[in-house]
Image 1 (cartoon, rainbow, N blue to C red):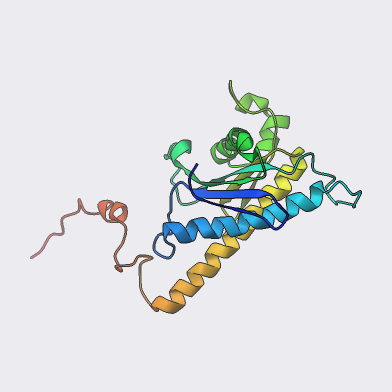
Image 2 (image 1 turned 180 degrees about the horizontal axis):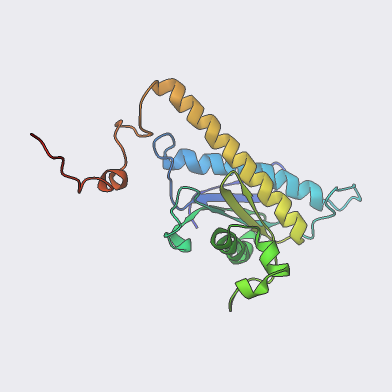
Length: 211
């Protein structure tokens, strides 16, 4: 996994990487990784706080370990896009957090396919999950952004996933508002003011009749 890494103030190794960048009109690859890392540092602080072994009350219970793996799906990818190509990025917190990425990926895949929290399928409709599926939930979707995490108890995974999803959506919307303010009026979310080639292809076949 490439991307960007650092050590959090709590002493946890944090790494983030994007697989695809649908926001290239306003974020370079480096800027996108930096944004993800900033959000990952917030999760690191939460994970460390909730794992702290000093008897402090934690509203969601003490976390079993100071490590997690997160998988973020691309909300701009069409439903025909294979799941492995529809991954937006990953976040890893703590030593060994990367080993939980397959678990998180399984939750994210099921959520994207079923359009609902993977925990529902696991606990209510296991017939929707085939051979090789992960036996635990949960996953979160905030305004179209799916995030799944693994390493803690299921409700704790759900909480951390939901926070990361919400904070990513807010961060991207803030960046977009700044981009709009800088660029002014226009029709397309692009540097050259033109639509994406795939959008042009939808109607390029049409030949207008003149005369």
